[in-house]
Length: 244
Image 1 (cartoon, rainbow, N blue to C red):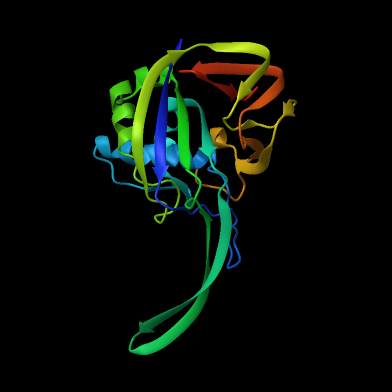
Image 2 (image 1 turned 90 degrees about the vertical axis):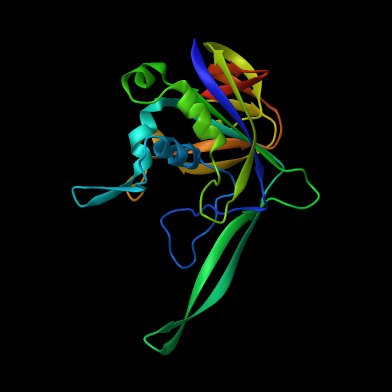
């Protein structure tokens, strides 16, 4: 048995997630990647122990402070109700430097999640109990941190937490299942609609994205049927698929 947290999130309008590497014409990610889910809960979790550090510096490289809690999670995934629309506006910025007016152009890519549709985000975290027992955190700490999530991605992506469900589940191997949660697109057959999105493999580290390994995730637009050699976990009344 392993613990899970299911976090229901209400977006306030936009989710600004930049695809990397960045440039003046950088594009937005339509769906929330696992790295963002880890970063979202890591920030309040680190605060519980008095850490305000967001960036780690080691051997001339910078990495996210979320690395310190990365191993607390066996798997993370997300379900999004409503299809976000992507925008990438160009903005002119005017500044004054040493009394001299200057101007520059930048872009602000984001996914819009408001309108007639009832948008909702549900994140699921599978807890690594072995790693949890070794460190300073408790399951209660992680639950408190889930309630403390205030944004997903960039600072413009303000959200509110609607509920946090805690429970236990078992990992099972099956040939077929139905799910609405994102899963790795590898050696599977899918019946249903969704979008493929390459994301950084968070299990190899968070922060140094220039050389990070990437995997392809399938984000269902509704409940889909998946066939293959699958590892699954039932979280409440819903099923998630773990990486094989």
